[in-house]
Length: 117
Length: 148
Image (cartoon, rainbow over all chains, first blue to last red; front, side, top):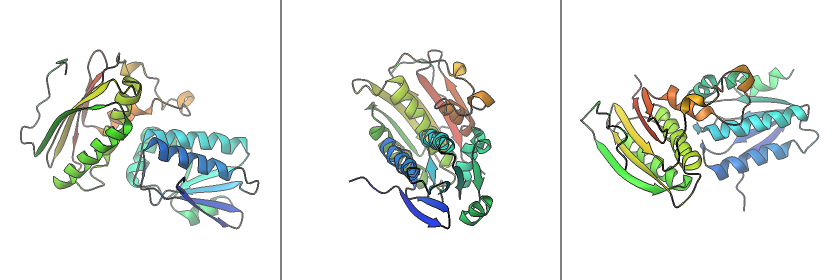
């Protein structure tokens, strides 16, 4: 049985996916996590997606790659993606790779929701 | 293990050292990383302070297992690791053909930002205090100093 890698809730028209894993580095975990995020886009009402990383303390470049794939699919679906609650150390990896310029990154869920307005 | 170049000896006051080889699987690599993280904690590194080490070992072992040895279980990864309360040193060798780390396209260039791969080398260079590949490109040595 596939483990639930994200916890999903809806606030108005915003879908919020909170990552359940503390570490996003194992290939299988990243595959399942990426697939479960992509599946959210199958729902036509999911046009504003927030991915909350508040539980995540480590992620590898493989997880960054999965996020780039998600970002591409989001754009194809004409949807919007916001990442939030990223740990300072992980944020450093975003800065080093300049992915902080690719993604919209907010402090928390509230700020993310407000950014869609 | 080849003697491509000598072990760097910044510190001789090591609290923990390990030299071993493992089959080319990320499960084995992650078990090793978990062991290092536990040893760093014993040596007084907090979880936040050990992040750079975690990131570097993760990316270095992805390179060795997946890109160097192509996850071929007939091939092994050879590791020497030494650490204390201030410093971690590692030498990681794979049995692949090597590569030129300077030939990896810069993933921070505008045209490359969305590339699927190529971030590992950059992350290793940025999260270590010192790093060096041998001429063949199948041996990586690095050091990470404890922050602060």
